[in-house]
Structures are given as C-alpha cells and as structure tokens.
Length: 203
Image (cartoon, rainbow, N blue to C red; front, side, top):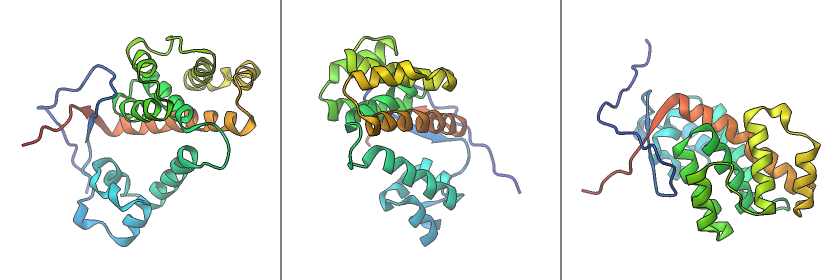
C-alpha cells in the first residue's frame, strides 16, 4: 500500500520572506497525534513537537528523526563555547533565504533577530537577500554560509580567515559551518515534503 499524496488547492503559498509566523502543509500524511507510540515520542525529543505535522511526518522513521533532532539541538542549543546563538541562527537564516525555504527562514530569522537584537538587519537580509551588507562579522557569517550552500567546495581558507578575523574562535567557526551545513540538508528535506502556508486564522 502506498501513501496518498496530499494536495492543498486552497493554499496560497507565501512568496515573501518574513519574520512572521508561517505554517507548513505536508504532501504525505503525518502520523496522527493519537497514533504516536512511546518510541515516536522519544524520537521527538520534546513531546510538544507532537503538535507539528512536520515532525509527525518525520516520526514515520523514528530512528532517523531522533538522530536529526539531537544533531539540530546540539548545533543550535549547545552553550559550551562556540558561536553566539544569534550567529548560528543567522547562518540558518542565510541558507534558508538562499534555498528559498520561506518556512525555515521565518523561524530562524525570528531567533536571529531576538538573540542578536538586530531586527532591522535581519529584515534587510530577508528583503534584499544574501548580498545585504550587515557589518564585518555578520558579513563573514553570510559569506561562509553562502559558499557552503551554493557549492560546498567553494568554502575555503579565506572564509575561515574572515570568520576568525571577525572574532570567532575555532569552536565558533565550527558552529557556523555546522549550522549552515545542517540547514542545507534540512531545507531540502522540508521543501521536498510539503509547502509553506499563511498563518492559520483564529476562529
């Protein structure tokens, strides 16, 4: 038995990048929340993610989901040295902006703006794209993230040197690389499994 393909003819996909909340509609049926087993819940890592159709869809392969989620959380939430949270989120936002993932860009733009306290700069990045000049340090993060996104082999010593010159140490540089690389993969997964949608309207 094959899974039915879900279509959303009523959906008008957003076309503008924004920090506002964006929804996501799957093209394959997620597991129903009441069908989640203890193994599925463990794979979500955070039980609240059971509300998300994206994570309930990924829960069809709980082993892969758990590895994906623990990797994600270690890259973005690990506070044992490394890059500030704002710059990890900036890298994810840059990659998502370049790859055209409006949903992921909205999520990580909110985090970058909140942790960096640079709402106007994040909005410029979303509006103008990855060529927006945001100062030496953020520009170094943007350039490294763009290189890793467009052609990973383009990322070279000059990007490392620019990140180091901006004040990041080796752990911080590794964090930027991991955040950008992870979201190159995460964007492609999300873009292949569903579509962005405007925020749900309250009744």
